[in-house]
Amino acid sequence: MEVGNTPKSDSYGLKSAILSPGETLAQSVALIAPTGTPLMAVPLVYALAGQGCAIAYLISTITVVLVASNVNQFARISSSPGSLYTYIAEHTHPVLGILSGWALLIAYVGTAAAVSAGCANYVDVLLRDAFGIPAMPFVWAAVGMAAACWMAYRDVQVSARLMLYLEGVSIFLILIVAGAIILQHGWRLDLGQLTLQGVTPDRLRMGLVMAMFSSVGFESATSLGSEARNPLKTIPQAVMWSAILAGLFFFVSAYAEVLGFRGEAQPLDKSLAPLHVLAHKAGLPPIIGSLTDFGAVVSFFGCTLACLTAAARVLFLMGRQGAIHAVLGEAHETNQTPHRAVVLSSVAAFLPAGIMTLRGVGVFEIYGLLGTLATFGFMTAYIMIALAAPVFLRAQGRLTFQALAVSVLAVVAIGAALLGSIYPAPPGAYSLLPYIYAGILLVGLTWSLVWSARTPVLVEEN
View 1 (spheres, rainbow, N blue to C red):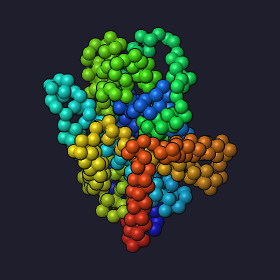
View 2 (view 1 turned 180 degrees about the vertical axis):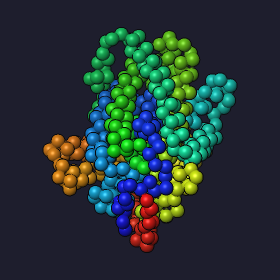
View 3 (view 1 turned 90 degrees about the horizontal axis):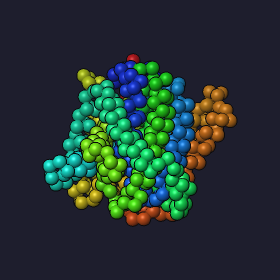
View 4 (view 1 turned 90 degrees about the vertical axis):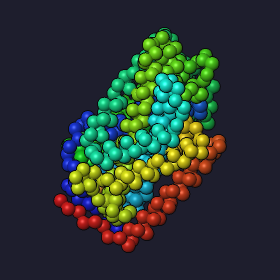
């Protein structure tokens, strides 16, 4: 089994050096889906953490910046389509590489499934308000997934450009609403939020996991190692800046939403369109609220597209290196995309979301459950990359006390969040998610180990 030993100069049949720095950044930004967080994730975090919502986002931002620093130890000198999977496989052990590959697949596919429900929710909101059309979450989730699959199948550059444009306007509109709410309140600090008034450690712990889900995906630009121009420079920049800027945006949004909903008859965690409510409360034109709802649709769609792009490239490289069936490691001759891996990722993402909508599960519950499941995958990969970083730096003779400290802090922070999501056991179906995640991960790892033991690795061609 030779996972992680492919030449770094290969393009693997994918398009080579076609993505600009902005398009590379767009991959990470779109997978984070910053517009979607104020509209769906913040209410869920508030339901768990109460007035600790904004602080939960501040803690998660610090954590992901620590992880980003470890990711960039690799991204500055190595690039491939395999994202963190390749870094871990090359510098620890092939089996750990396969484990991280499956963790990332659960993360990306689970996120795609979660945000497809979010996209369907806001399509329903727009159509209900404009035309009185009843909710059809299954239909809109299917349409969104099919459209994202088609775009990822056809052209990664078109996909990246679209993701870049979709988020900009949406973020601007949300900042207008947040700014209006803060100005309306006056420039007085909301000490109830900043001092965690009435917030217990358990509530903050539970909110932190969902807050982490908002920020994960910043590393997904590393999956474009073959397609980005000057990848050893543009990818590290995309990883770090997406983590920092998204985190600041989430903190401001959460602070403004908790502040704005204070005194409202319907609490924040019960609102299906919170920015619409806040735009009206701030006295902004009604079109602003509708535009933020539309921004949610395009943001969640962009996130779905980014997830399929990242998941397909992990599958693609795992297929080339014998960890899964080699047919997934083949690129389309004309489009130069990992077309079969894209289709498989799309089907895998749609099935859980589609089945849950048909069974009548609410879209916010689907978003929360599948998002939490995906977060376990991200946390696993982030812990592994943080552990791999000092091993990698030591082999190069570049290990410093500062780098070791960043690695240890990242492991402690992610490990504490992961442990806190398991014990004490969260309520309801959330208590089952760690076992479901562990089961999927174990089945995937076992299958890959058996498969790779009897399957030759594809011969790479320059």
